[in-house]
Image (cartoon, rainbow, N blue to C red; front, side, top):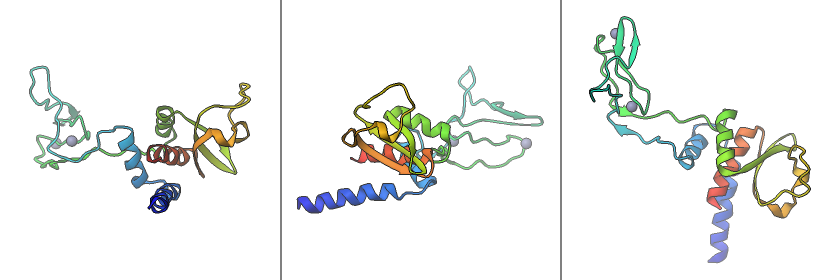
Length: 168
Ligand SMILES: [Zn+2]
Ligand SMILES: [Zn+2]
């Protein structure tokens, strides 16, 4: 039973290492980052000071309309278009956008460094021989690399390591 459970655990970790950059891994990372990405029925229109829906929240003469504070959706009150009732905020491109992925690395306290022609991200307990040089794989003792992921890009390595960290 223990062996089977361990086997499933390992399979789960391996599948994260094989996930490509794209919407699937972005969505998983968004969840761990606490992003509000739930698909809701109905928008949260920005309100004016009187508490009414601000019909000029989005304006481009001669068009104007409200703006959803969740999904940034809008429509023109003059053109008569019916807005999509589903409020579905777009998921941030964590696995491709370096600025976004860096927020993940900071939140998860990941070290990011070049590795074998690609990039690695690791959850480290300590850095041996820290002499102020940029981090490199050689600076870490294997035992200190609690969670480790490698990918062609730093963005993807960060996303994989972050998901492994919460799955471990
Ligand atoms: Zn219009
Ligand atoms: Zn919305």
